[in-house]
Length: 271
Image 1 (spheres, rainbow, N blue to C red):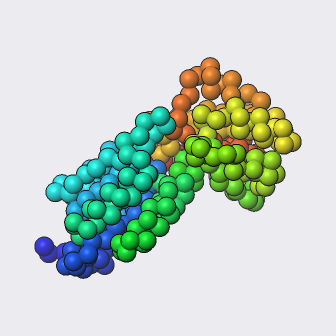
Image 2: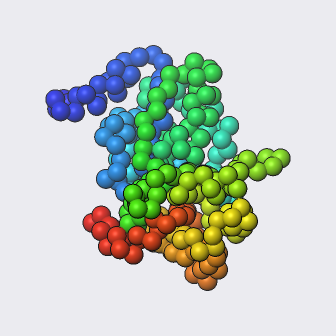
Image 3: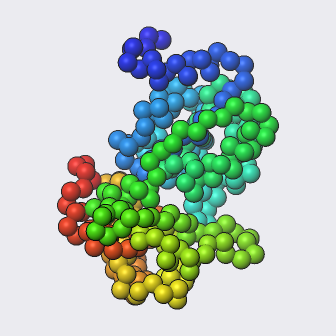
């Protein structure tokens, strides 16, 4: 294969790995959905992968970048629907790395931001499988940006907290300290928070956050089907019920949401 000089820097790791006996796993962040936000390194790895194990939220446009000869395995997990359990996914990566040269674990967003990338990397390292992480743009940053909501702004917010709204099953007690979250920063970004939104709102308001605090939900952020729903802590749960707004969505809480109406018209072209 002849490789243009400009691309040789990106393809060289693929070529080097294909000549080795032991396979390597790359934990690649696919970003939030817009194929233009996929990193060059991630795209290159997809194009030379032998096996790609991908998540449910990876967009079709990014899946189309995968080497046509590669084995593609859907390991997607959505609420109430599990294609593979986490332990099975890690074991699958181990097995495939022992059979082939380049295994890509393709994750929506960033592998290390609520993507269980750290867990998978631990499992691979424990059995001696070479592994590398390729960061992606996380939806908690990209979705608000495409909705015209800057997470920081000198007039509104100088700090941001990222938190999960969907804690692991089987926990004896919740690990998220919502009272601390309520007063920890000016902007709160919640991943996977739609299902537990009534509980989260109750916790934040009980902790003293004003019921008039602005809230925005961004569904399918950066994709053509992106949609937003705005309100306050007092009204957002009712608005969700009235509109039938569903996951997957990012929840943004704080004064920066007030900029949505002004800036949302500056959305990137193509949406």
